[in-house]
Every structure is written in structure tokens, then in C-alpha cells.
Image: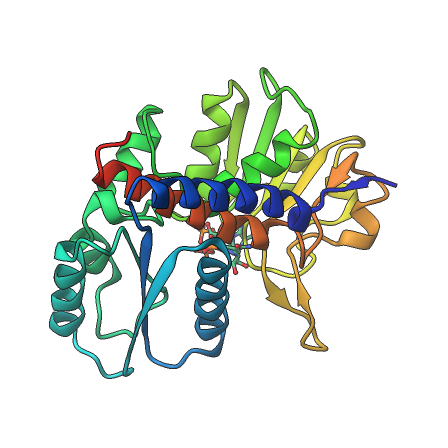
Length: 284
Ligand code: NDP
């Protein structure tokens, strides 16, 4: 039976540090603020936005919500982003994805000031992650790195396999592992013989969005398994990409869903908002 990596407990430590930093900044006269933009009424997006706002409140970060109707035009959203870029009390801007189809997500991300891009999706921040010189962390991958570190594994020379190559999870995840001297393989929907690649992994990160894609026969005994997936099973229950019950008999450490990567993503977002406030006030 593997060790369960407790994302709730680890994220609580991160948030405690963030809360302390927010209080220290307040003493220096710097208030930390996040603007959260949501377009339309996607229920999952609403849950994420509420949870981000709640966490801001707990940590002393002020949050402003901009809830726009589903028929908002690209021009209207870009105008709001511009306004928030110029608003000094807003340190971070988070535009909740996905956006309605009449709006080009790439244009919106490109419009956010890189210094306020707390999701680290802007090409400037992505480029900095690529060259290993970054301050704004990609939220979910950075959270996964904290979880991996919590196991005590030294990544140098280890084979890490990332399943999924999205811009927001798979690709930056691979980069962060590479920066720690792992040998990294990225898999995707066209990968041939996924099982044999996964079986080589000392660290296996699944970021696909398919329930039970990773089964126990795909995992090397003793591997560390990080499950980024957020899916609903046939009963509507939240589950990951990994067959948790079976894989936890093989892995040395594994993240549960819920209670693994999810809480870390929000904690990293809060850390980024503090970083953004420091950057904008010449404190970094
Ligand atoms: P995307 O849909 O953008 O990417 C999914 C990736 O999985 C693609 O690269 C795709 O390959 C690959 N893929 C699809 N099918 C297979 C397959 N059968 N074998 C191997 N690879 C496959 O998803 P995201 O990266 O945005 O998110 C992935 C999952 O993580 C989702 O469940 C999402 O909800 C969750 N998530 C969780 C977060 C958290 O905080 N816990 C935060 C962000 C995401 P290809 O490129 O070839 O199409």
C-alpha cells in the first residue's frame, strides 16, 4: 500500500506562508488584490471562482469578481482586462477558462499584463518557464512539484513521464521536472504503447481528463504517481485519471482525487498573487 500524498495538508502549509507574507506586506503599506473574471454560467467555473475568492478572503487578499454574461463580446472582455491592467489595487488578474466560443482565449491571455498574469499563461511567462528563469509559477504544475518534493524523492536522473501535453498542465509540468534534472517523456493521444512508456516512470504524472486511464499494470512498482485529472464517474463523483484503488497497491506514493493536486493549484495561485504584488511594488 502506498503513502497517500495529502494535498490538503501540504496546501495548508503553503497558504499559511502566503497569509504571513500578506500580513507582512500590509505592514509595509502594500495591500494584495486579485481580480477574478468569469464569463457565462458554467457550473464548474463557478465552483472554481468561488473557491478562489474564499481562499483570498482567508489569507487577507482582497478579491474583486467580474461576472460577465455568456454573450459578452471579445472586445468587451479585452476592454475589461485593459482596465484591470491599469488598476493599481489589482495585482493579479485571473480570467477563468474556458471562455465562450465567440472569444479567442489566446487574445485574452495575451492582453493580460505579464506582471499580473497569476496563472502564468502569457507567452512571456511561458517563455521564462522554458528558460528556467521565472517568478510566476504555472499553478497546477508548481503544485504537483510541491507534492512530488513532499515524498523526498531526488529527481536527478529519474525518468518522469507526463501523460498530457496541454499548455496549462502537461508542457509546463515537463519543463519543471526537466529543470530538476529528470529525464522527461511527454505522452499524448497519439503516443504508441502508452503502457510500456508509463511502466518506465519513476514519477508518473497523469493530466488527461479520462477516468481510470492509468491502471495498475501501467505503473512500475515503487513509482510516485501524481493524478491531475478531474473527472466525474458514472455516479457523478469526482475522480482522477488514475485507478486509485489498484494503483495505490503498486506505487510508493500517490495523490488522491479529491484532496491531491486540486488544493495545490489554488494555493499556488495565492502565492503567485503575492509575487505579483511584490513585483509591482519593487520588492522582488
Ligand atoms: P486538455 O484536454 O487540454 O489535455 C489533455 C491531454 O491529454 C492532451 O494533451 C491529450 O493529447 C492527452 N490525451 C487525451 N487522451 C489521451 C490518451 N488516451 N492517452 C494519452 N494522452 C491522452 O486537458 P488539461 O491539460 O487542461 O487538463 C487535464 C486534466 O486535468 C483534466 O481532467 C482537467 O480537468 C484536470 N485539471 C486539473 C486541475 C487541478 O487543479 N487539479 C487543473 C487543470 C486541469 P493530445 O494533445 O494529443 O490531444
